[in-house]
Image (cartoon, rainbow, N blue to C red; front, side):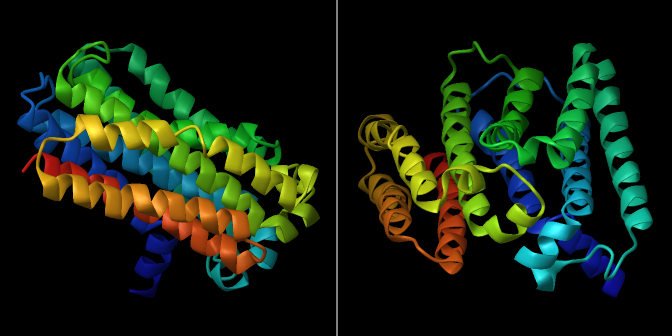
Length: 297
């Protein structure tokens, strides 16, 4: 049982659960509610979800392998490699998880006739490995790559199910959610860099806080965080239905927390402040999923 809990922590089961919920919510709730064209059978959809989760789990494991020295400083109570599992065993688990993800994704590509996605799955695996090994050490580039890969999980669902160019409301809503998810995860990745500066500095990483300093990085992040404000307000006023309860939920649990995030970021000074901000961004993203349930009720 101890090994099971260790495995769950290593693969970030909470993050994977969020991805799983997201996939099922769009497939069986949003697309169904808006009569979006759905080309995937249940079995094919399960193959897609299994592939995404397996590749993501492998990505988390290999990231821990490369982050051993940093984590000893930044998260001493969450260092699983090599304290509780050997580096060799972790790499083996990474290989198994990644291979299962690529095999199931390739099988789906063959079954649906979209053979080019075999390359897509392989490219994602490469980027996740390259991110852990090198890209995360490069200021901003690593942040953009990992945020884009998170948004990719919905774009590939759209491409298998229907078409990104489809004007169906379900597709448009999925694209809008992906847009918000990209920015929220980009901001969260930068906040995590602010939180992990000490370990990153000793590991000779070139993240934004190390190159610019905390204050300048916060100012840059504040400027970047202004971009989603108009879409957030516009979406709440124009794109929601006329139910007052839906609008109230949106502004209380998404719009207001976003402005709270801006305030907390502006006043943040200590590591614990950045940790709280990171959790707040994840809460906003989770609230977005609950909003989709309300909209499609």
